[in-house]
Image 1 (cartoon, rainbow, N blue to C red):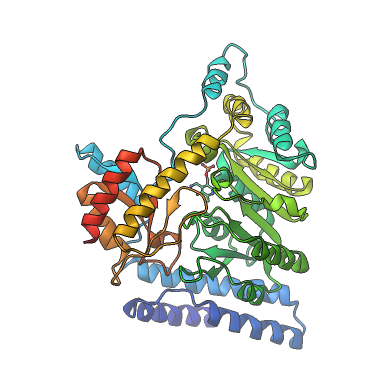
Image 2: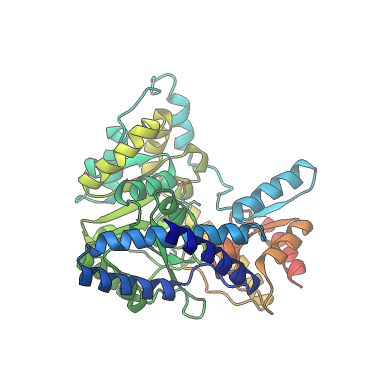
Amino acid sequence: MRKVQRRNELSKQVGAIKNKLNIGVKDEKVEQDIRTFISKLSNEIGIDPYFAGRLLNILLAESTRLQVNEQDSQTQFESHLTVFMNAKKLEASGKKIIHMEVGEPDYPPPENVRKALSKVFESRQYHYSETKGITKLRTAIAQKWGNHVNADQVIVTPGGRFAVFAAISSLLSIGDELICVEPAWPAYRECAAFVGSTTKILKTTLEEEWNPDTGKLEDMISCSTKMIVLNYPNNPTGRVLDKNIVDKIVSLARDHSIYLLSDEVYSDYAFNGFTSLLGYGYEKSIIISSFSKSHAMTGFRVGYAIAEENIVNKMAKIQATGLTSVAEPMQYAALAAVEESSSENAKRMKRRLGIICNKLQEMSLEFVEPDGAMYVYPKLSGGKRDVTIIRKALDLGVAIAPGSGFGDCYSEFIRISACQPEDQLEKGMDLLKAAVS
Ligand code: PMP
């Protein structure tokens, strides 16, 4: 314990230096070298390398926590949600704000959803339901995904977010590792941190069109690695991966018997086609989906996961412990949405993203044209920092998400959401242009 205490003291000092030099807290290369060393050493001295790896991860996590605290005391972290809150405050004081920071469609859910919801009282569909979700909804979801899926492989959750939480918290333990491709929606690493697991980051770059390097991914896998998370179409980049990259990732997961969490909540917004990971038939994959984006039902809080029954049952235990089930009226509303096509929503989103891309081209900003989702993730020019620009933009009346909310080394990026009518997007982009210049 004295050695741990000494290690923590040194760690804090290192954190202060990193902060001064503006270096990110995590250094994957250094961590990887220590892991390789520990794995070799534990074999030599006869300790189970899986146990040694988890113990090391606990020490590394403590260093990271102390160093982040050190940085937090000196810099203010901003994410799309803090921008959203600030924008709301400004609106409350009478200022007009165009919301291009959150991924919440402005158009309504399908008419049948409204009808189903208004029928709930009459039909008395307002009781406790099975934890995994009402059979009718699970069956309808299973049918939508194909004959090889059955209702027992589906769990209905309050939004895709809870499906992610239930998967991570039921399959990972303290000291286990999760590999996440960044930039990424921050919830994956937040869930991992919640259960005391370590997130290893596979960084991707604009120059490589946000494609993960599968060679690097292979090098990152250790005996403590339990899960790889993929999210395509991607939030924030809008990218969809080429099939050969997905093939390679699935085969790595198979070879090392690692869970594959595939967050496909934007799959209905894939403009040039998308193949779900479900098609690979890998028994350790978990597919996440949601009605929030596809059918503009964010506030209904209905999402789901598809996986082998033994995985679904583990996730159901978390759900039973925390919330019994998704509200039954909302499950009936979602049932009405399953058969509703979302292709018009996808066309509309593609048009809107086109408007944003044209404006970005006029501004000479670099970006990769999105294959799907609801966002564009451009790089600011001339070394400008995201936080400076988004503050200026908010002053002018448009809310934009900072790129650094999606990973430590993306402070030169911003995420622009297309969830506004076209005329508002045009106006918002003009205000952003003014802020940048
Ligand atoms: N996954 C990704 C990648 C997301 O961006 C979001 C929402 N922003 C979700 C999951 C969760 O959505 P919900 O909980 O509303 O289904």
